[in-house]
Image (cartoon, rainbow, N blue to C red):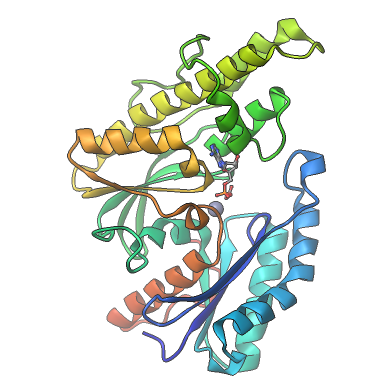
Length: 340
Ligand code: KG4
Ligand code: ZN
């Protein structure tokens, strides 16, 4: 482990986040600012996000250090997400972090954002029984939708992923069509509670197809067709709720099928781990839990605030990377690390 705490920055989308972890992974402080200014556009505007990261970071980093009761000089390591994500924000966050590391004369570790999601469940004490390797990770967020075989630190195999939209993107777009606000996932889930999940027949894209790829655009089109007769007239409340519930059920059915296929492709998996904002959805969570249980596997999902984008996961991935590099007597990645 490094000789002191690690400070990490996350800036790949519209969350500006900073966290400080002790060398053993204990969370000393963490802050997340969800940027406003995007809702009016119905989605994240990369240019606005990058400028907001730039404006927010100095104060956020100072406040996080203050929360932890630390001077910057106490830090031993600085880390940041360096990709994948919106490039403007990534450059702002990693540039800030590299500058800090340079000023403090301590190492900088580049963290792959997807890897950070993948390793979150291994934070000490987070999930009962821990999350030993190998496990299957289902990462479902606004930007990502993939099944990953997590075999070790730095050892990941993508088993499948979406061939069009990410799951969260589909939730957001359908919510928009239903006239709900943004981000639409949570609002669609709320509306679905009043609806009947079998009221409206919708397709199950790629169901029972080989492999574990996902597709959501056909589902989106089907919804648009159901909505077309209404034109500009307001939707009857019950119809909107039934549509929301039927959509959510279709996603859950597809998810269960795809993950069963992924587990077939990875018989050595001891655990199913979910991460990403969509893993906050209650129906999807219970569906994944049932899918795992039917195969005698444990299911683990980090608590919601660590499922969505945050800097704790970046700091933890940096510590894991550091430890793995030490085990192999190698220097950890200090430049943009885009490992598959
Ligand atoms: O992980 P995240 O915060 O950001 C990234 O995209 O990386 O995920 C945000 C996504 C959004 O698309 C949002 O609509 C979706 O997660 N989401 C949900 C729920 N809560 C958030 N989707 C379905 N049900 C939810 N309860
Ligand atoms: Zn993410």
